[in-house]
Image (cartoon, rainbow, N blue to C red; front, side, top):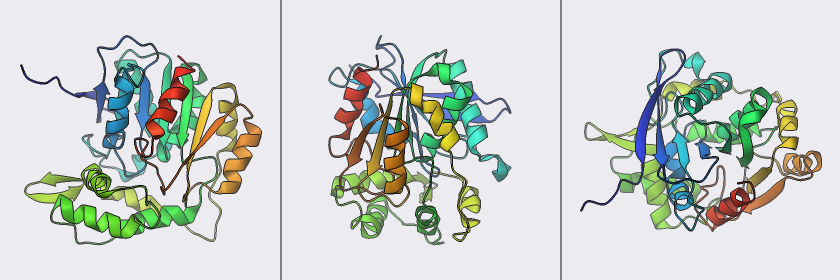
Length: 293
């Protein structure tokens, strides 16, 4: 007998016709209120693979989990117009997916950009949010971290193998993410790249970097405190990377003051954005979700 699939891939047509892809885990489970995972700006559903497997298991709560590839990422269709890679459109795509899958009230886990989308959903459709987990992102963004992200991808030369990619990522990130071991760096390579026609390619549309290149470090980025305020009536867990260069510690502390019931956790030995299956964080996530069945 063949082993059961770890996940089911699906595709949903967004309101403008673009095909958005995602993965469903534990769909045979009966636990209410599925978990919906939203990744960072250049990331994809594979960031949540190990976490999703854990949450779908009996040990993790036997939950149904959905992990989404935004347009232009992972297995989703690329948009011909890069200006459509916006928070608003990606939030609308997320709502289209929830409708297509017949999901009502859900728990959102948002990493980086995904956390911004979660905050937008709290303003747009608070009734669908059972709980929210913000992974290393808040209403204020440190632009230096965004610049670091796009500079990471500026080299015209791509690694030739997954191991070469893993070694490169380790050299760039070991100092700020010592929690990663060799196995995790190799997983990171597979999360970022895919093999296409015998060559490694990035798992996102490089036109996404256009908006990052336009950041002016002399100007303050718009904040999202108004959207964050919509979370104060929703159970929330905020996770900050110990070595984050995106979520300022001052902003993290202000979030606690404005949302007194918000739970917090630190992703030790990680930089932005933490992988939530490293360092026991999956248990922290599962315990939080268990309180909000």
